[in-house]
Length: 330
Length: 268
Image (cartoon, rainbow over all chains, first blue to last red):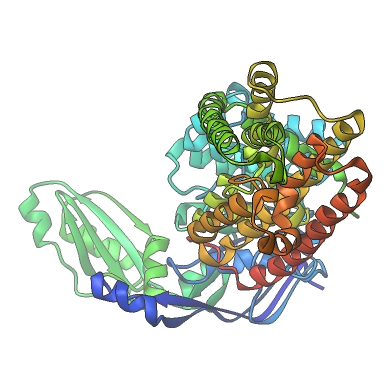
């Protein structure tokens, strides 16, 4: 029995629509038009304990809806969902005792209180024994380096500080599953790294199952070995990052730095590779390793042009995801 | 595992402490209530002196007591809803409330109790002192009346919180909640006796006023204090308040179950 089981999960929302302008507003008083939006259209997957899974998709794809159903906040319209044998929305109180959730765009801390007071309050709400609480809290404070701003009211914290406090708040009751809904949104590079390190450590040392939704593909590459890609309410792909790449495109990129003039760089071309960008003396080509072996391509280009440096890489994951949705640029 | 009562206690305490910080609002509220109290006392004094006071259901000193109690306890009325919760519903942070291993109805009821009591205490204590020392408010009619009115006021807090929580739950459908949260205080102002002591309403209106829950918020505790309702009838008074509270809690819990099924968490 997997830890999390989702079968054919469905959820639709009814959205009241109003025609724009004054006339629309007046008509809306009498007659409301409703549009049905299908957020989840039969999503199925299962997770084992201790996995760290990236759940990705564009805005409105159904990521947050899935997280909200799995955490017991929303009732689905159909399908089956069990987390450690519990049906989240039916056994809500029992369920939320054992999960932690962070919504990156909102805070669960009391806005006017210092974070430490929110922690104490959460201890009472979750009924964590005092000794256990102190041990868990102190470890979280240390791992997330919270001590410098624990006594500052939350409203005065920076976004990065607040997010670290929010992570701690979600873990005070030692949940076995952690849902992170865009935890790095809006954070600077240093804070992002701190959050990633912490999440990776939590999964490694504590065996906490983590489900991470994000738009930041660096998060995914740094943390997840399994990804679920959702689009239009359907699961498009479930597999490793490598499988995701292989399924969408086998394409690789060759970046070449030339010596000589920019004029020369602009004239670079190759019969079996396509130039996709010029940037001064840097030229980027894409090629299919099935058509031309990377070594042969490199040898040919090095023979024809004065090459200072070159390297082969996979296309960035953003590009791959975009292709998966069928709206790749270019 | 049941949620321990201490969870609700902790929420109540935290919310109460936060609300006690709003001292400037309390000072302004106190000044306004004092001003209105003086005007109302002047109006009733004029009425009683020009008409025949003998036939009135309340004597002038009783009315003056009633008015000062009204001014002191005004914040106990089901004014508006917890602004925090309103904000949470608007922005979708309400999701976090559902992530707590507590009963959402009692969680919000608890927040509402803090919302009803902290601002009231900040205003009531100085108002009772000033009115008692300088403005003609008399002490409770008897020790039994004192104790009885305290008891009635405590149940009035529960009743008012049950009404407010019901209004709060309407947010699950209307998002802004402006409509109902403005209608409710208006109804309550009239039917609880805040605007005009209920015994002064015409005879034909009395059965309706008796039946409605609102008199439990002001009229009943005040008249017990004054001695206008004798201490022997206290049981009936408490029963009226408690039955209405129980009915409104029951209704609120039903509404919440339906609301959660229909709920859409705002924003991404």
